[in-house]
Length: 562
Ligand code: ATP
Ligand code: MG
Image (cartoon, rainbow, N blue to C red; front, side, top):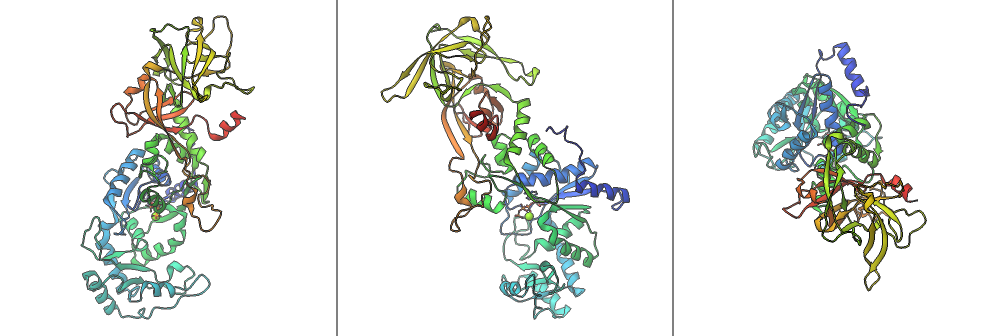
């Protein structure tokens, strides 16, 4: 499905906004934000959130901020901030002058904490983290009040200011909201607002040694920015009462939180923590490894921003978490590239063919159509000569009945060139086929027989002496199981499901010479073999291509074989 043909479907989020506009709840304003924590690279799940937030702002003539929710100094890095901005732009969205950081609000957030203390709605608790956790109770049992819950306002203000001043080591105290230790939501049982962390922050340096928790920061950051619709994933549904409590207790602008379902895909996973583990454990080659679902990885693999936006629009937003089939994503890039990728011929696993009745020193330039889906793409010349390469799989010495490609005595068409008939098979001492001999019919130039005779197969080929030798990387699913968490025995973890064949390198594929001019990132269809793009490892004459996706999905391939 193309972007323009996506129906302007009113999902439940858009229905809420439509209704708010009708009732003038926000005086006609629509203001969203995309709030990543800079502790990893963005993945295709984030793309869903980006397209939703920025997309809604665009559709309604509203605004969307990019805000880094950078409250955790230990896991955050400038590297992640930069890559996130780059990826959002690559996807096609623009935050204009609205780039924000939660860390820029630290002073305001701190002042609000003092306000809550003065209103007897927060207190300094000197229990250890374990004791605090233990005192929370469970879903069926209420928690117990901290012995520090009844500290006076004066004592709390004094201790909190001294926490800020750096008088205490990590873990000595925390600031907690004074809500209700018997509340039915565990998260409402006097949650922690501030922790002492003598740690440098990637933006505020050593200015702070106390840091607000994500839960105490997120809603207020939205409030400061005047966000109207704070759109987040379903796991935050049970945090909503807490965000509401903070905004109400402080008496500040109170955005409406709307939760939607996360995107999950089969044969891969979206957890930033696990992606980090794959990268750090060198199970993949980096954040832009074409096998992982980071936007970097997908981009390097050859995905276009258009295909990702169309996929995300197709998937839609609901209230139900489900896992989407990977082939749905693959179908979107196929559809996009089918329209715009020029066709070329490339032989991945070469077998030499000698056309014995073709003149030794002759080369002909064959006319090849660049893209049958796009008349403006024109044609190109492809050199043809006596020695060629075809795909090893396209020849069988002893073919089964339904094998219509090349075999002894069979005639096939070479794309854009001639009909050829196999006359001989040459083998080495071990019996391995080294080359095959064919004869061609000069009357079939261009690929049609004047006498109207038909062949059942058309093969791609490359002229041996003109071929561009290149490295081609073929990818398969990252995991062998649809659900990487499915393990047969408890001693194994998700990493045991990594697919050992997720990357297969063909070091010496033979490609049509015109590909020698292709630039990093350029995309092509290699006829019959899939969509490919030039990889950034390309250096001078050593070209590297990634297969983005095969031409058909696995399912149809199995069908065709059967
Ligand atoms: P973490 O586990 O570190 O919190 P996260 O994936 O939630 O990771 P954030 O940086 O907090 O990462 O995400 C930014 C935004 O992207 C959030 O609003 C989050 O809800 C959304 N998001 C993250 N993963 C997905 C997903 N799989 N599908 C849809 N939205 C997602
Ligand atoms: Mg998160």
